[in-house]
Image (cartoon, rainbow, N blue to C red):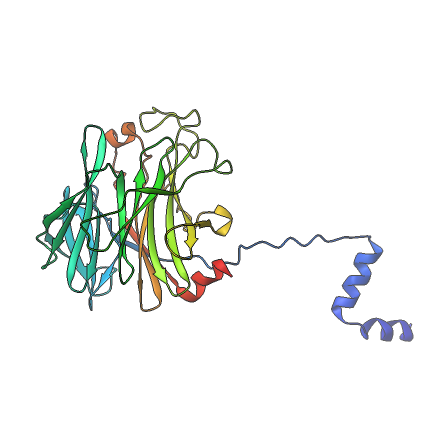
Length: 324
C-alpha cells in the first residue's frame, strides 16, 4: 500500500490525467481558431436623439480636440468635443453629407447628387470648417457614399458603384478637382453568395499598408432590394462591417478575419456603418447604427429606431495582428 501511494504521488497532475485518458481510450481533437484576435473596444454611444436620426458620418479630425461632421435635424453640423465621446458643441454648416478631410488647415468635402438616375460627385473646399465653396463637379457618374483619404501626396476616393450587385470603386486626384475615372476594386464573390452587396469602404493608411472597414449589405434572399416588405429572415436587409487590407490602398484587397464581423453588432442592431481615422497610434471608429432594416418600408415606419453613433477603438499593434 505504501509503495503504491508513493509511486502515484510522484507523478505530475498532467501525467496522471494522461494515464486516465489512455485507460479510457480518449482522443482529444484540438481545434485552433483565430477568435483570439483582438476586437475593437466599445467606448459607448456618443451621439443620438430620441426624436430623429442623429449620427456621425465622417472620420474624426483631431486638431487638439475631436471634430466630426454629423447629421442633426436633417442638416450637416460640425461637432467638436474635448474627448470625442461627449460634451459636443454643434455648428451648422453648408457642407454636403459626404466625406470631409483636413489637409494643411483646409477642409475638403466630396459628396454626391442625383441626376437622371445617376449619382455624380461634387467637390467643395472650406477655410473655416463651416462654409464650403464648390470647386468641381464630376462629368462621369461615380455612385454614392464616397470616402476620401489624403495619403500625403494624393487624394484617394472610395465609393459605391451601382451595378447589380453594388461594388466598391476607386479614384485618385492630385488637386481634388480632376479625378481618374471610377475603377472597380472590390466586389462580392461566390463565397459571399448572391444576396451580398458592398455599400461602403472607409480606409486608413498605416506604416504597414491600408486597412478598410467594408460594409456588406444583405438583400432579400430572392434578390429583393430595399423595396421588400416584411416579414424578413434574420439577415435580410441588414448591414455589417468586415475588415479588408491592401498594401498600396489601390488594388489587391484582401478580406481579413475569415470574413467575420470586425465589429459585432450589439443586441437588436440591424444596420451598422463605420468610419475610422488614425490618431497617435490608435484607430478610432465612429459608427452609424439603427435597429431598423435597410428598406423603404422600415424607413417609413421608424417607431423610434433612429440612427445613432457609437465609438470604438483599436491600437495599431492589435490591428497589425490581422495580417501577421
